[in-house]
Image 1 (cartoon, rainbow, N blue to C red):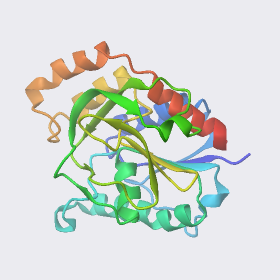
Image 2 (image 1 turned 30 degrees about the horizontal axis):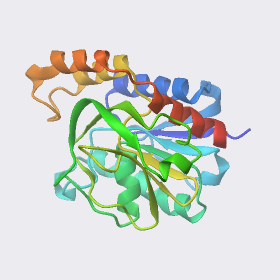
Image 3 (image 1 turned 90 degrees about the horizontal axis):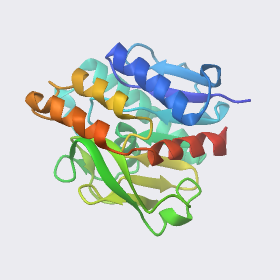
Length: 244
């Protein structure tokens, strides 16, 4: 049985470890079904073939693909280069991929889509998402409620739907919350792995990273715990069941 390749980008160990456990929990898989690589610490293995894995899951992180390369730290640049190096394989083989938040920007950038901070950034917290007509026919989103809450928090966003992509989920502040390329390549702007406890921890960790004024941290944590966020985890679970 093939494993899932889980690529992580967060240089903060506590955030990275918690995210990894959350991905496993939402996917409904155990650690022995995953090959975890923390790209802030490790290089991709030489000659890595994505088809050796059931699918590729990319977690979130503080970087932005649209930032000026001259302003990126060496670690951020190396992480981004590593992930982008796999995207030609993924799209060539239409190989199962789930990009979470940062992973959406990576997919769109690879497809020559426009990713920027011009529009559609969202503050940290819950947002109401809506399934599109195409989303109602997609294996990962069909049969879900047409409206539900998800956790978000991002500075950059996809500005227009990249060529060849299908629009699955939207929200009022950010239209492109979930897209699909081909039949098996997915990406979400929201965090399908996260629950309220995850976001509380991330708010503490990233409160000085420019996502929100630090003095708003407690109010944002309260908003996260008041939200009813369950559907995004179902999407990640469906992805793992479909391809695992």
